[in-house]
Structures are given as C-alpha cells and as structure tokens.
Image 1 (cartoon, rainbow, N blue to C red):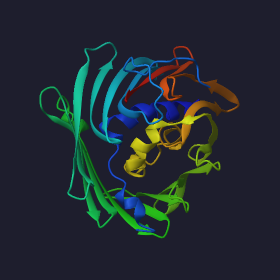
Image 2 (image 1 turned 45 degrees about the vertical axis):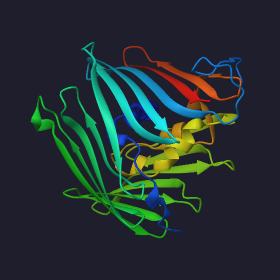
Image 3 (image 1 turned 90 degrees about the horizontal axis):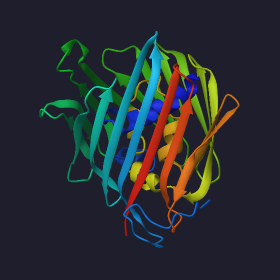
Image 4 (image 1 turned 120 degrees about the vertical axis):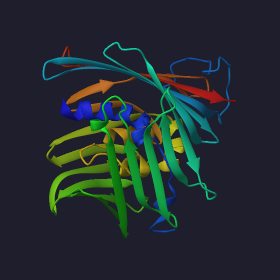
Length: 321
C-alpha cells in the first residue's frame, strides 16, 4: 500500500514545480495494442509516424484519510512542449473542494541551453516555487529551491543542494542537513540506485533493474521502506521519453531522500508506454487508447481502497502533425 501510494503521488509531484524537468547537460560528467482509435488528439485522422508531442495533460484526483481527516486534492496540469522541450506549464490546484488556484511555470535557459531557473507564479503574481541552478561545465554543482507560503510564512522552505561527482556516482549534500544521498548510474547513464545516509549510516535505498530495451522492470526498496514493484509496457513508442530525458537526472536530484523513483522512471523515461504495475502480488492494469499511428492518445489509471485511499489519473497526449 505504501509503495503504491508513493508511486502514484510522485506522478502529481513530478508535474509540479518542485519536480519540474530542468536540464540534462550534467549527465555527461562521465563521458563529457492499438485500441482502434483513428484520430489524434487534435481531431485529425493521421497516420504519421513522426507525430510530435505539443501538450501533455495530466489530471490527478487523490483522496485519502490522514489520521482520520479526509483529504481530497485535484491537480490539473497542462505542460507545453516545443521541439521536444518543455517550455512552460499551467497547473490548477484544489484541496477539499476549495476554488481552483492556478500557477504558471516559466523555465529560463542560458546561452548553452542549460536551465538556470524554474519559477512558478500564482494568480497574484507572487513566486511560489523557485529553482535556481548553478553549473560547473556540463555538471550541476548546486540547486537552490525556495517555496513561499504567503498565508502562513512559517511553512516557507529553503533548500540548498550541492553535488559532487565520482565516476558513476553523484553525491548530494544539503546545507544544514545530516542526510546525504548517492545516485548511482550504469554505463548507459541510467539511474540504478538511490541511497540515503544519515551521519554516514545507510537509512534507505532503492535498486532499479532494466530490461534489454532500457525499460525499468523492477524496483526494490530497503531500509526505512521494504517493498518492491514490477512494471510492464505495451509495444509502442513512449512520447514522454524524449521530452523528459532532456532533463533526466534533474527529475530526481532535488527530490526528498524518501521519494521513490521507480514509478517516475516507468512513466516518463521508458522507451515503451507503461501499462501496468504489480505491487505486493497485486497487478493494476491501465486503460490506454491509441491513434492510427499507434501513438498513445490517453491513459487512465484508477485505484480505490475506499476512504483510506483512492486515486484517479487521466493523461491526454496532444500532437502536432
């Protein structure tokens, strides 16, 4: 249950500014089913093999009970893409039937195409989430993250992460924290292990296994969390991969040490479309629809554990011809 909850909540976090994709230049530090739908999302009858993703819509309705208190959140995200790069996004947020609040995100790059800032602004023009990225050559050397709660400033956050590189291992330290995190890559620059240490002692690790196509097939956590999940796919190209691989590791480098990464890799970095997950022996199959070019057009994921936890995830893929 905990593993599944983390997998699915991570999807909503991934679209918010706190985990919005940035830049992949630093990844060079080592080596400097068709379901019969014939229309694309723009209403065009297309057989093109090179449809380009232009807008990715991700809507998530999450309900859970937190120490007996019911919580419902709705997150509707429109992510705008140009030339396989995310340029901006608009996110609508609502909690417990409150009016929707809209935030707009803007990504700024330097002359080398590296992202140097990633900022979300609310309807009042106030910055709510900020990322500032510093580079040493092609490598990320520091990320500063700021969160502002204008209603209750006691919830404001500031995190400064520093990164060191040693062969295929990236070590993250945080100013003022006793927890360090190591990210280990394989020879294909794929993340295969994330391990957190507190005062030098390992407290949580997640190991990732891939198949010959480069898709994650299994993730196993140990330490504070002991569980595993396996992932399955269809036979068609995942249009999210080329978009989110542009910022591959930065999708993970600034997350919480306890955030599990398997579901994010399956969703956004697989070569094929993720269509099911098996957690603790229970398999959850997703409903995928395709256009005539065998491009994924929509995906629906639904889980219902009663008042304790339920989630509905709806994705839509809009293409340019």
